[in-house]
Length: 314
Image (tube, rainbow, N blue to C red; front, side, top):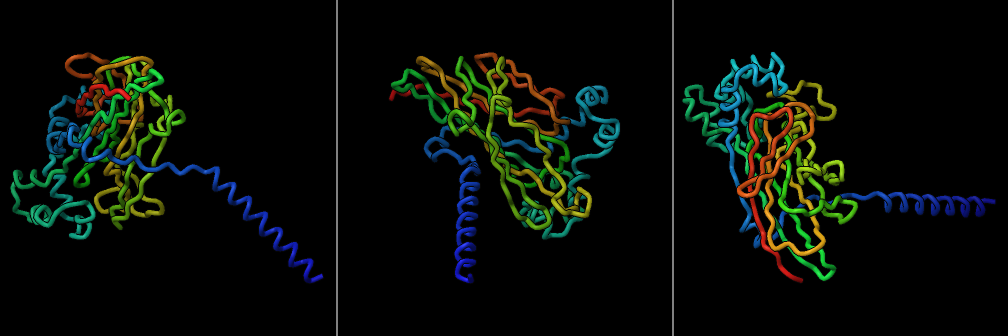
């Protein structure tokens, strides 16, 4: 009897192991979007933007214009009454360890901590974002299709002051069709988050589907995301000294195809900062010289980077 119970137990254990194996086999963990080779990145378009300039431009807009873009009266009052330098002075009240978690260097921390720092010195500690766009390839293959992939990357060097939402998009010329992730396993985007309290980082990769495709504009939008959000289990509010996660980096890759031969294409990546709410984007193309990408409920600014590529035969 005892031996029979042991045999039954072993059979149940084997069955459970088999079921768990099948369950995990059916779960797909998407790989993060990785940058292209150094050779490809050498011809990428790289732009660096300063949050001080962004905020200053936002302040110069009229209350009516800000309201039309979705800002509340409380938002508008705060924007109009708060200078960017004052935001940095407030941030300087954080501990040195916290400021290091924000990505500041020792020299920048010294400026933020010094009550006698001038506005010009404070502006040197402004958050900066790097936006990179590159057409990785344009290939005409034996199946008579022309294929292309476009890579977009953005990264904040230090954590920005914004508490609104950001977004990004990629647009392209010609009649190339977007290939969603289900068709090629390439079109996807990755967001990297950092916990300000612990400096721990995590990432999540999401497939880009036909829902992200703006057909008339020949563009793909990375869904708008909250730049900062309360960390799981945090008891303190989202704020300068709260425990929260910040999306400090992102990357996207899209795949395109065209039946026939295309000898040339051009693409453009865009990043929107200080946008309001979760909304779609409208895109109009005008070539040459550039794409016009407009986010609905317009953010204060959209930053663009163009890149082009000529075809290779395979």
